[in-house]
Picture 1 (cartoon, rainbow, N blue to C red):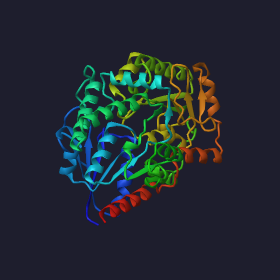
Picture 2 (cartoon, rainbow, N blue to C red):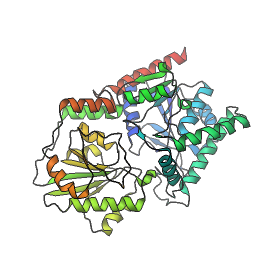
Picture 3 (tube, rainbow, N blue to C red):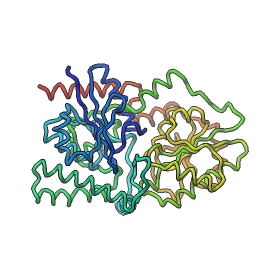
Length: 432
């Protein structure tokens, strides 16, 4: 087979750690065993940057193109991989790929969906849109700009409009389009929003939940491929090679606190979230036999802001951001979190005890909750008892296996291989 050129439109650059990049890198690792590949990452960041190389791939700035059709004609990809969620990138590249006759593969998010009221979805999306800080902004030297997220969103929408015009959308078609899809995104009761407009030639989903969501959204059944989440393939191999490296063997209980980035997504007020984080840390530190570290989101959160927050309250505890979460978890005894961060899945797979803090301040994000697996604490004054209690908390093999099957599907280290085989089948079929 000839060398395959794969176009990956994405918001964050490939060197920024996130679960989508992890999924794709694991898939590409398996794909390279069967053929030579040329990876082109088209990155949708708010600031312009120069083209550069990263691990034998090329990273392009979307600003250098007027629309997706022009980029496809220049890059000449054999395949496009994007997310299935109803977002600007998903719409742009499924429409552009279909127009240019390039097969498109979509991947679903990890775990299950969140479900909100329409009022809450609209409110949180409005707060996010009016934010000065652009979520997932990877620029190192640029500070927030007034209405930064709104400016960024409008620029991407112009890229979408130019793409639709290039596909020969009439003015009437554009009006119909913008009367429908932004409304679905803003008022969707599910997070992330979904619509069949983002369906690819092959839609890869990682659990039964997402298979059902795709079918309910009228995705063609024959286009859906159900398998496990490739993000955890290497973790499976790692677990087989070295079982839990630390299980309560020190004089102090090591706690890893991993807050979900709530205000960054418009789900909480920043001041309220920071107050909650400080209160939780201070409450934990009242115990003599514990030590705590704070691990924030690797790209969405601001290290500088959290560092200043800890210093302003004289909290001298380790602060982590870019460090490997698995390495940190293996050196920890307990993980404490709130919300629905994917680090919950890492901790469950490592069979680390988890305390999920929930109260009226925190939106009820429950996609990863399971009381048979995770202890839920709703009162900060009960936290000490939960920390003592969780040391002896055990999970049955049946509950563990059911949870894993529900959230990430197969967990056998072979999902990347299955997906790479399906990708090659699609490319061969398209070349006939």
